[in-house]
Length: 261
Image 1 (cartoon, one colour):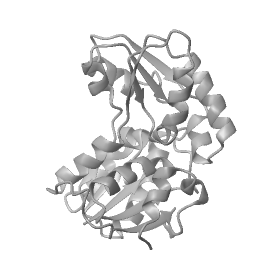
Image 2 (cartoon, helix red, strand yellow):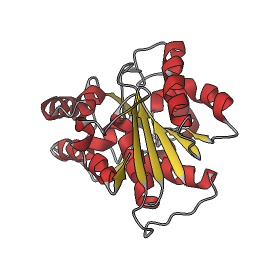
Image 3 (cartoon, helix red, strand yellow):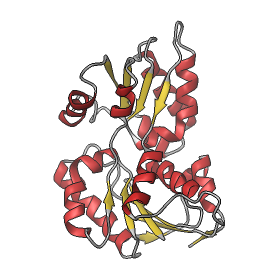
Image 4 (cartoon, helix red, strand yellow):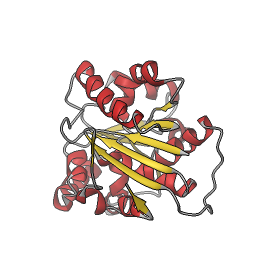
């Protein structure tokens, strides 16, 4: 079984690591776009063009499924990707975990990029799934870029600024950008440092999208399977080693064993 994941950068690592945990025997293809990133400031048409380049490179590896491990690309390009690749290659999008967060009935904060915060897409999800709870949208300018380049100082600054905008009584925190899941420990530390904070639960998308990919393939989790899965990395269509910044995160390092193509 071969599963491809795509994103503008290393935000796909969290979902890739989740797939690896569920199926250590699965071959993984990571296709990203360092030449065209960031995707967030692009127009929908431009973003879709870049997403197609990355998806086509992944498709050439003959995967059984493709995970669009990017919230923004899922919003603007998912339909186009499905039109081109399905039914031969099932395409699984990524949606912020607003629904399960709101279902707990507490107060929800959604950390997202400035482009996503307040967007019609996110507001639509809030109306559909969180109409009965209090929701705070928290913009996180610069955080995705800081994570992408593994800039710890910049991550700390961006996280501290976003934590200051997060109400102390929030019970559920949605990580609305796939990059943010790579620094969840730093986010947790910043939130824990707020005076008067209450216990809260994180909601990311990596585990859910990995499980959905297996369901689309009719496969079952087999976490005890031998770690025989290979890793192929494509950087704007070019075969490459896993980037150094990706190796700074546990999710990246866990993908390197046993075989990198």
